[in-house]
Image (cartoon, rainbow, N blue to C red; front, side, top):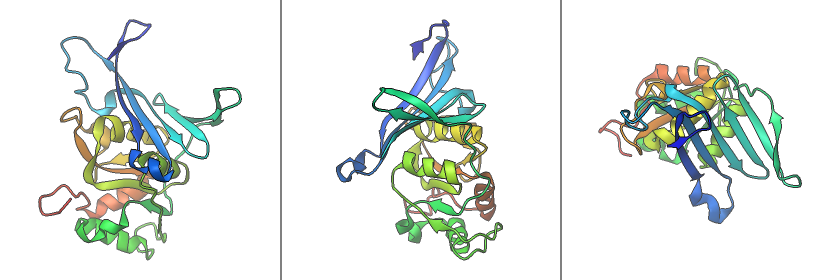
Length: 231
């Protein structure tokens, strides 16, 4: 919690290095943050849903360093100019396509996925979902990298297990997705409507093209949160 120049108190939730397990093999990593207003000493910090966010963003450390930011009305991107040591706006008003042709999750876990998710993936590979599109898999195993690609080209990225932290991973990225015309779901409801269960509370996550995710939600049983599923 910090005091801003305006006199308002701000809550900042921050994942400093997403994908840290990828460092040794030089796969892209990133940082994620979300910023909300803290209403005062009587309020428990970080106790409100993602609807209270005022800004969110991420940095992607790859062949170039990109910084993507939203204050809620639009999502914009900047690229680091190393010679000038500053960020240059490189993506104006990013728009996430309503549909894509890719899904992004660990296909190796398919045997223990929920039945609804198994059905959607089976149909997606064969062009049998409501979109009629034949989907392909793209998976970096770095949340920021997978989300960045999805934000730009469509489809969805996520994890059916309750693995990602709501406050500093899922909610900020859902905020960015929604500002770009996309959608963030836990498989049953909008991620931005979920009230945190604690600082490190985890949720299932599906982020990206609104129509693709809504189609998948229609299959039902896509969360791996139930006790009947291993995770």
